[in-house]
Image 1: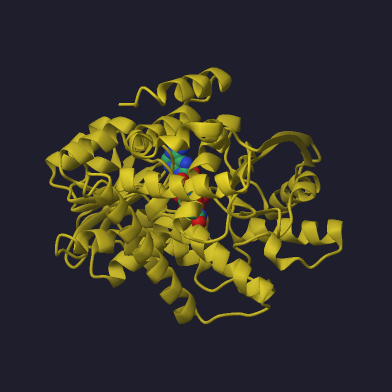
Image 2: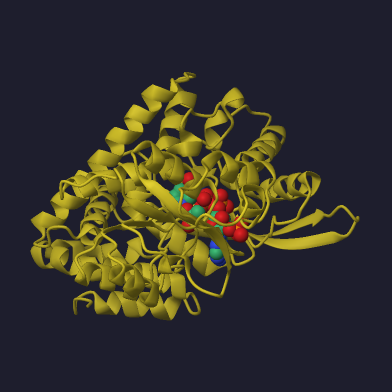
Length: 451
Ligand code: NDP
């Protein structure tokens, strides 16, 4: 339910941003949480502060022409939404996926603004990407695409202006190609302009692992409030990309048993527990489809593959669910199935993977629910640590960096839990994350005048 004082703001967002359902969904969720804030502090309604927070500072859309291996010219569309820089330079990943459009990038940039605020670090919010589909493309094609993409984007970036990172379809290889092109175009070795770099040219230890590890730390903290832990728990993780793989690794280290993972072609179940090395071989080395895990492992003994569309990964009974693929992948029906099967906690590794109906079902059923903007903030927090290391020309050890990450995740957990309690809904991490993130951004915006 939206407070009546906030409804006109939502109406304006819906009217101004036609055909952008993901952006509408993200704004609606935050505004639903803000009713109690504006009742307690009506001054947040002054000076169109909330309206300004819902409007990106800048939206850039550009043509990305490139030549494929057959010599054919291909055209894609590039995006960068610089959402809010009240707390620091715009910061947020780049997504390469055919589903990308301006509405999706706006929803991600909006979420990113509050997520970055929650980390307590000096970073604003932004997001970008392209409708380019990297699947099946050669290294040469990926490189030419990344170079063309950066040839336009570079003029909008800078370590004090806007600092992108990876997201779906953008990992270490793509960041390397884009950094190389940025360096050529500007003739500057500006290491802090991109994060997610490889270690040997300015990357941070633990950045690759950070989002998956961070979500696992968050869920661990949430379980601890009920005197529970990962030990002996059955866990399902959707996706099998960066976030998923490092969630599997950390959950296993914490004594949990991950029994299912997926990609867009379907999901696999391995009741003995996912063999992490085999999964990495399939996804990181061979860049193959998830069913190849079974071809290499051998079917049977509780291991099988289910094709996409036949049934959902969320029908696999588990104690903890960690959706780590993409937005709106976990529906109301999925949530009901999980609840029926006794799920106790959900930690969103992906951005907005649960539909609003799914979130409602979890919360009404007393399932501990960690929203992505809090639970997956470990990635961007470690990106900010990478920027710190670049600025001081330093390189920290893995242990040092992971210790910082773990403490940041505990702080985010405690901030969300504390804020939810302060506003009368103990255990409501959605409310806590939205309010705590909003207040930090709003205070900075107010201090900077009408911006
Ligand atoms: P990757 O590209 O490394 O992996 C994405 C995974 O999700 C792949 O297994 C992919 O399968 C699957 N997937 C993507 N789109 C779909 C779809 N439409 N349907 C089914 N499966 C899909 O991305 P990341 O792991 O980096 O990102 C995953 C999520 O985490 C995203 O929501 C991202 O925004 C979020 N996130 C990532 C951060 C990071 O640091 N990387 C930080 C914070 C959030 P397939 O290969 O078949 O497409």
